[in-house]
Image (cartoon, rainbow, N blue to C red):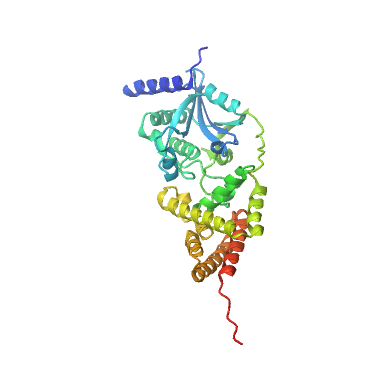
Length: 379
């Protein structure tokens, strides 16, 4: 049997859809057709930490075995980093041959799980038509959002649309915050975990009521009923790999604690100033990104109390040897730090930012003591 590459499959499919749509018809699936959701395991690369979701349409009579997914983007997009940061980077839907798709995951040693949907032939056809129509329309492109619009949520949306209702909803963990749900995915990736802890704001501390991760969808599908029967007809494990453990001499708690302990115990003015400079610059970045980015996850970032841009003003007064305002600003930031610490106690990210709270507190107290004017003694 002749096999086709992903690009050939994609363009052949588009060609048939275009021709058939021109005559008001669509490719008719046979009664042997199967529709399933593919859940792909997590990897150790940043883009693969959360896994992936796709839809498979298989029809042996029509010699079709196609995988549709909404997780494609182009690194060659002009101003890629700026667009990704701002939140207007365009992701898009693609179609690939199942063989190419599965070979890629076999090569990268990532598990793939399949859930065949127990739906009628006409609903299979409707989903198939909707997927193909998407590929030929502007709906193929969408603006990626970390929680609200991604490869998983888009699959949920198009299946629900095809089933004529909100059939697939979040099952389980709706009493946990998005941040709490995310944290286990960062095992072995400490600084990535620290990064999302300090750059994500209020939204990720809301209860995670939406399906936004592949394995959330997989779990929810198994618990979903449709037309008085389970939506999932059969579960299969297509590929099974144990996730390779990550070993890094620097990406862990130990280097984090060692660096902060060094700052605390060395007690040198130059190190304190460098620390305040870094914290202040990060604060400026968080303020900028909060206004610049369209990502809702980056808005209302209360970590600004820890990474305060006004630390730069404190540093300027300190360099100018203005003891009065250096002391006052140190006290103000110590108070902000206490407020921040109390506010964070019941948050999922409290433990990971606690060493930073302690280090900032020690440095600010040191700066305040060194710039406090001595009380004159009257004899």
